[in-house]
Length: 163
Image (cartoon, rainbow, N blue to C red; front, top):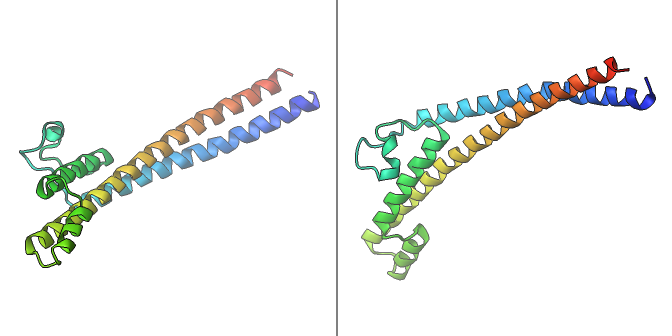
């Protein structure tokens, strides 16, 4: 076996072995992260209303929020409710109105508080959705690393047998 071929065998074998170790670890970490998201969302005891959901959210009626996609859908429900309550204004816009009114308008103060809470809850749910998306990426990359590692080890073995 030539020096170049020997080096290729060692490099392919080492890279393949490293990927075969790293891939399942990544996949396991992604699955663990996903389980943590499910647990945290479950502990919040968030459920979609049984009725009255907009058309695109009606498929979630009565369901508990336990996954990233469900968290995103519920965040949209909250966003819709906040927009309806504030007439499409953001927390910052309502707050500016309250300050312009001297800060004494009780209705605007209550609306500002509601907008703040709604937007904060929406952001938290969107964070859960983003974390869910990251776990999908980690799981997918783990599977890809595992498959690539196996292919590199097979190529390394083929180089050894072909000498």
